[in-house]
Image 1 (tube, rainbow, N blue to C red):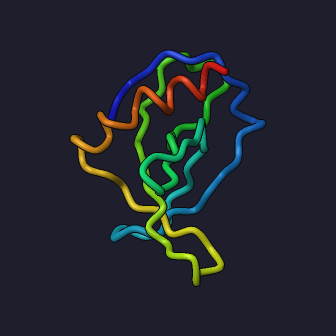
Image 2 (spheres, one colour; image 1 turned 60 degrees about the vertical axis):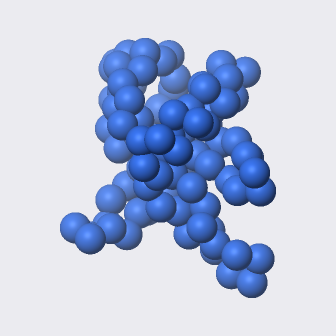
Length: 93
């Protein structure tokens, strides 16, 4: 998890539902990128148009080509560090 400062209209972001051990959670997709054949997304679970600091999480698509829907999982800190800058670059574009 990282905290970043952003200026984003949160109401225009895509929402995804993440089914975790504690039930379903809603996340807002801030950016996406592809690295080493896998799709990654940068998400936040907070919705507040006035917030400039948001906690973010990196998730990786673990689905294979035979699956019709993406299956995202949270990545560990080491993997998050590897793709975080790419996701921020996409966010700034």
